[in-house]
Image 1 (cartoon, rainbow, N blue to C red):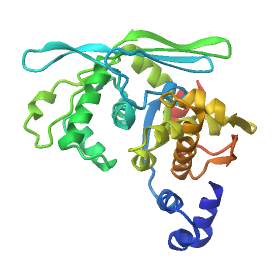
Image 2 (spheres, rainbow, N blue to C red):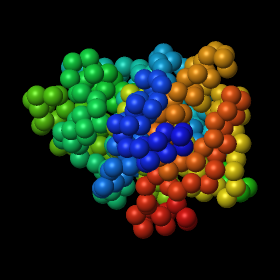
Image 3 (cartoon, one colour):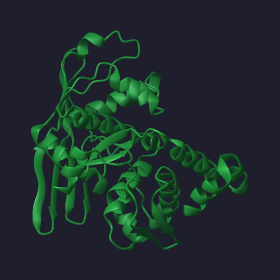
Length: 315
């Protein structure tokens, strides 16, 4: 990845694009150039637990429970019911999945951190943000985003993490978001959004105590890639706290990120492609790639934390 950064820095965007061989590399040149040229960095936030564990990439069906581990951290998502339709009948929803669910969560978590409140008034603000992130909120996309909102609200979330032999975060069987609904594009349902979205006390406390800041523009470049988003927040979490290089085998990455891929051979090319995209959106990252492993090296954070967030992370 440092090769692309060096080309852009030394030769500029247009010349660097001429010097690489593939469409993927030209796309990486564009992302790196935009990230390096950004004068004003806007931050988004996510719960640190989502940097260690993640949502599924594809639909598991209405009954499947999702569990992921990373060291001593464990995430469990459980399908749940939500009143739906004119008759407000309870409908069972599977757990949230994919890039759109991740982007919705980035928005509501960021708003909670920025407003320092677990109550978030959406109106059309989430629609507008999603559109700036490259996700049109109309047609089939609107239906998909609305579906993910309902899955997020219906599901139960458990998280358990022990750090240095001490339980750091734990919350169980919580419906961690309530009132999450997206406005229609034409705004005809705007009167429905007077009630705020509310994060559960347990989840908000964990988020407030353990937020991870990331660059909003990086999310825009990765908004269509669920694995790329996962790798970006993982790198954002890991690299700036390293004190020495850390080796991660592709097989180990498969155990952490490869759910949904039946074989390591199927996962490897997807992992490497998405890792390169994530690194393009994080040009400060110092990561070496080989066929069998990646080497993580101490790196600056992707965005400077504001003081309150820095204190929360340190604490």
